[in-house]
Image (cartoon, rainbow, N blue to C red):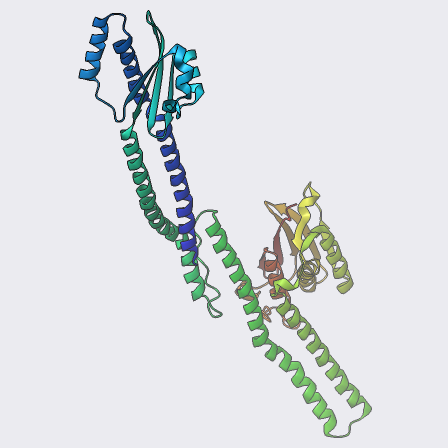
Length: 455
């Protein structure tokens, strides 16, 4: 069953239940309270009957009898009983009063009047006292109008309920269709996205409702898929080229060494060349594997970590790799609240990303200073790495995050162009951003922003 039909049915069930409850309430109160005027009419007849039958003089009695005959229409099954107070107990026990409770007569004696009803047979009783004695007058009649009225009311309410069910269901289908329209649009858009069009995104309208959250979640998922596909594509397209060069060197050097007898020094030179190419092959393979794994977010666990501790570890690594470089940590921008330095991250990957940046700064700045600063901006923790090295030419800035790309002014310096693409993937995996400002021969500044971990 489709969600649209489920929504329409639930909406119809809810509205119909409310309508039925209201209809029952209307019928109940109409049946119980809407016929008080009939009791008033019976009370009037009881008082006139008392005076017509029990008036002290005949003239008065005749007058009330005339009024009753000329002005009061006979009610259906109308009956009147005039009971002397002395014989009331006998009347109560008689078959005539079988439908009346004793409390009915008690109320007459106490309040001078009482009303009772059994089905559509209405009773009204009054107490009357004059020179002839004390009497109880009981008038009964069938309220056929009430019977017909309630029957019609039942029919109207039942038909109204049936019609309202159809109307509510139709409206429910219309409204559910409109409500689910954004989801249908999302479904159509998602169906158009495949492995060759992962750059496309769903259109997200302004607002923070559930549909907008769903569209944003899809976009985030597509972004992760795009990053994974890009990583794998880069791995496939570049691995063959980068791995082929050292493999060709190893095979060529081995063939040359086996082609004819050589001296020990020549064999040592060949083995040294083969070892150098093998080490290069190992470094390239390790970098490619790290680059490929960085696109697989689910392979890594996330937990709150302190970035100041990561910076401290990176500083030690830099001193070990480049002992002559001077890596300084700038504490002037530290926030007052140290909890703002906590981020939700994988400690190994974040340390790898920051160390790539710092080691690049050390490599390309010679013996000059490298400064690492840690600050907070809004909801982000900011890592700033600045050096005074050779910088990056402006023409190369658009390609610095491409795998295996190396700037035109670093020829002769070791490296494979994997560090920055790997760093970008790691930062992106942590919902962060990385930006680089650089001028040739003036230095480079790298800014990394990672969201603060909310406690």
